[in-house]
Image (cartoon, rainbow, N blue to C red; front, side, top):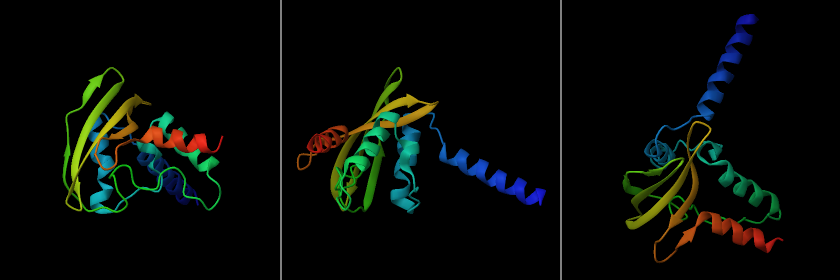
Length: 155
């Protein structure tokens, strides 16, 4: 019986370590973030990638969105589209200033070129996504502004 309890405790400990993954470089975070788009291993909880501030925006949106409604995000802001067939992913070198960094990411989604800038923050011993900016002419956005606009509708 003690062996079963020990084994269960070990599995829980290892699972929580995996969920609490921290990324030593901005590039490592972005690489890990995009990996599921290639191998289908999307985590149930993406909060490990998000800063506390960005997670708070997601949480607030979930709280204020009326039941049955979609919420602020009606597309995947990390691929700038609804569906994905990502090719030619390139992760630029991070520009780091203290606890903040930015990383430019380019790729093609269904053959259409996309360009995003990730704003990152060093938090809890690792890099986290704090905001995402798209300057694509057909759909420019800043993720935090999408959440702010939606929140203003429900105030």
